[in-house]
Length: 186
View 1: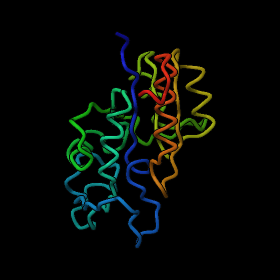
View 2 (view 1 turned 45 degrees about the horizontal axis):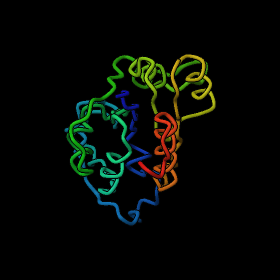
View 3 (view 1 turned 60 degrees about the horizontal axis):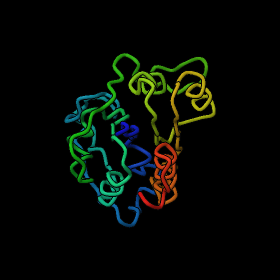
View 4 (view 1 turned 60 degrees about the vertical axis):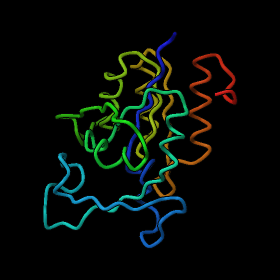
C-alpha cells in the first residue's frame, strides 16, 4: 500500500479564523482561551504572564473532516507541539507530529518565500503533501515546484473564515488524484 500524503496544518487562519470580526464568533465554532504563559513557543506574543489570554476559535467538526481525508496529518504552525495540548483535543484529533521550525521560526527570506516553506519541504522528504495556510504566496508555489520532487498542493485559506467545504473538497480531490481514485469515493 502506498504511503498516505502529508497534510501540513497551520492553526491560525485555517483552523482559527483569527481575522474574523472579534465580536462575532463564526457559527459552529467554540472559543478557548489560552494563557500566553502556558505556551512553550514564543510565536504567540512571547511568554508574558501579564498578557491577556489568547482567544482561539475552533470548529470541533473540523477534526473528523480532516481525519476522513486520508492524509497523515502534521502540525505546521508556530504552535508546534502546543497544538497537541490546546488545539487537537478540541477538534478530536489524536496527538500529531509537528514540524519543529527551530531557528527558522519567523526568519524572513529575501526572496519572499515563506519561512515555513523550506522546513516543510525537508520534512516531506519527497513525499506528496498538501499545506493549508493563510500566508502563502506565488513565491511559495514557485519554490515548492522547483525544490520538491513530489506532488504538492498549497491551499491558501482566508483567515477571516477558516477552512470551508471547498477547501476540504480540494484536499480530497488532491488526495484522490494521487491514488488514482474518484474524489467522491473518499
